[in-house]
Amino acid sequence: MQDILLEEVTQTQKEYLELLKELDEISEQSISPEMIDKINIFWYGKRNIVNLMFEYLFKEKEVHCFTAATDFDTEDYSQKSFLF
Image (cartoon, one colour):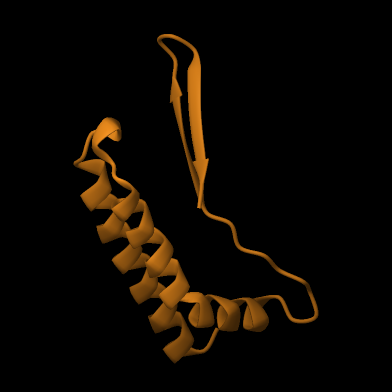
């Protein structure tokens, strides 16, 4: 991978980690729609770099990117899922 592209992807990963750390400090019940929007807006803003990376890594392939999170409570076997 080209150095400048690798740097952009690495920076994106660091920024996303910081965003997830912010959410990790909040209880599940306190996560607001605005916070979910913040994640959606983050990935919307990074869509070009993600697409460029896919084009470079997976030439001549059709690639899709999904991010998701799941909370599985082993105590009461309930599962709450959401998809971004």
